[in-house]
Image (cartoon, rainbow over all chains, first blue to last red; front, side):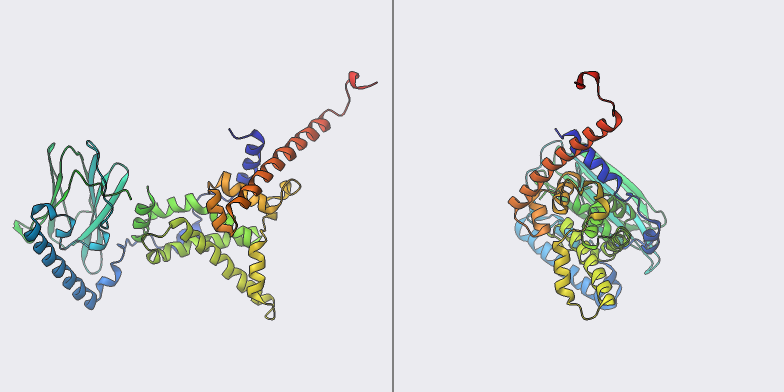
Length: 206
Length: 188
């Protein structure tokens, strides 16, 4: 236990420390109004968009090839073409996932004035750990997210016109499959992206 | 919120994440900067400057780096830049690099440790508050201060003993002052 004399000393020190409130001047200098997804600002440039498209195409090909060669078990995060790869948990961070871990998926949309698109961030979490990936949605399109598990099916959806935040929680007693597909009216414009959070993978803790 | 999540959110310019980082580290950053500058007003200004840089340079933070060390190195460099600017304004002839090294070695906590100065020296003060108040391990303090773990440990032990003794003496003196008339038993 800490000696009362030391506590007195630390109390005096604490009284001389500055407040924990963010100073008004500092808040003014920082721009919190525009949310910018990490590592994407440079993607607005034409050459960057072309590069990104190329990377996505190559990644898709490799994913398809791997899937074809190794079977369905290999189909994991890498099979989501339009989602930025750099935000996906890097390989190697895998350990055993206990049964009945609380897994959840939440998502939010925030709109950007330019280049007239919205960014959708998906948060996948288990217990206190979360990772996220994001993709884009253009005006008038609606996105649906579906989660399948032994416990049942959960769906959340939203569109460009609504700034949305939704969350679905599922107890993992088996593999959790998340399906994302984008519809334009009733027409499906993208393939259904399916990826899995297998029971034997812990995606978050290093 | 864990560190990875905070960094990811900072990269999206998330205000809540920034506030959390500020709440968690602002006093530690202030302490580090005050130790270099020795002036409370300058330390407060440069603490703000540090957090501004953290927010604007977060894209330069790479995965795998230790966020706390990254943040503290920005704090240290911000304070040194400020010192360099001040020093060059004072005298162009001064050997700035040498002067800076000297100042880093000598802690400068006089503004906040006046009342403890009679018990402990500044290095002991620095070690004790970094460990007990800011929660840094001896190893982290050793890295931060370019010292060995055993010397940090010694400073800590010695400082704690001195504080206990000093506070006890102060309490005794206060008691004596509040009871100036000796009891009958004490008079022979």
